[in-house]
Length: 207
Image 1: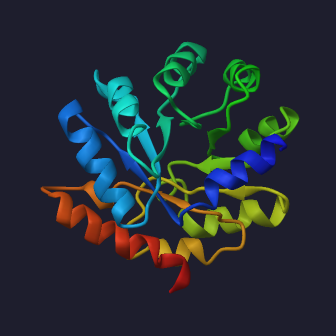
Image 2: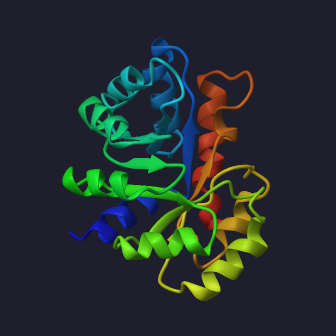
């Protein structure tokens, strides 16, 4: 399977990839179980908390969970994430060293891009799948439409500022394979709430 095919397999599993910031390892498995029960099986655990790597390890034990690491900033982050059990890597930006490290580990890598220059650098590295980030403050849907009109073979996972209400409009774009969203675990929540939100998000592609 090519690198692009591997990324497509990650990006098309679910219409929404939950972007997770988990502060307590004890929440990891119940949270993953609730998300999977709702139909969201692709989970991005951001490396924004001290326990993030442990959270990845715990979530990876949940049947049906396909867990990756987000906010990966450098090759060291990537290597630690791989050891923790990550099955894909997401970064807010793109560097050659990180792309090389992902290729060395045969790891699906979804780097963040914000403009045409970023995408062109990615294309030079053999990449055609990107996270459009931060999506809303970066010009939103009009900006992504403009970029997609120039880079026809590129597919995106817009992330940053997307809500349950706006997600369908993003997902309707031909260049969008999925979106990243934090609303599913926003605010005070319990397992039932998460499962309900995940169920609604999993159906977005069909709406």
